[in-house]
Length: 303
Image (cartoon, rainbow, N blue to C red; front, side, top):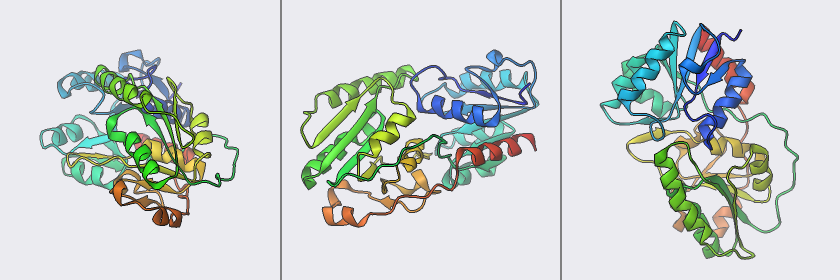
């Protein structure tokens, strides 16, 4: 029987955190379910709850998830994908669980005054990749769920301004009612963009990791221009998957990928020039494969 159970509310829906959780659970040898009550085992040494404040329940409702997890295990931890820098959230996050896992140092600094915080970087997936040389024509590529703050339309505008190609792979997110509504609106905006020999917008209900990495190898650069809210700390799972394409990685803020090196920070796409883009020529290294990160979680949860 598994010694660890993992709970992810959005399992079975089109959600990056759900995919992250499935990979992590498999690598850890953990059981997985949408709720603590649905975990197949009667008792575990630890239960890890995946949580995203932008997608899932309110604080009051989430108290019940933590309480239910305590019926399954003596140790209950929360794995956070974002941390809202809002005073009323911070004590609650850290005090509800025996430990809180975070993806970067800014998250840890916000929460550490209130409880046990464990910093484990986001993993890079373990999937087979057939390597291909980059195209001869400069091509900006990105992927993700269709949300306005992802900057997909901004990338297309930038590519048009520079006279280079753009490749966007976008999916609809139905992790919750809020994300479903937001994603539906942006999906319609992307569908309205005219496809040309320079603009390639690919849309599917869901792209597999293999399809994403294959698509990104059709690009010379991968870019995630998402801006960081002063009220939110987060790490980008998409950027960590993009490492497997072995293309130079451009981001809007270093916080998204602080464990990756090298990366290129582009805070203003309007200031990006073709000359600068062509000097960005080194892909990031993979220092945290899934197997390493899974062991870090197991060791921390079972210590």
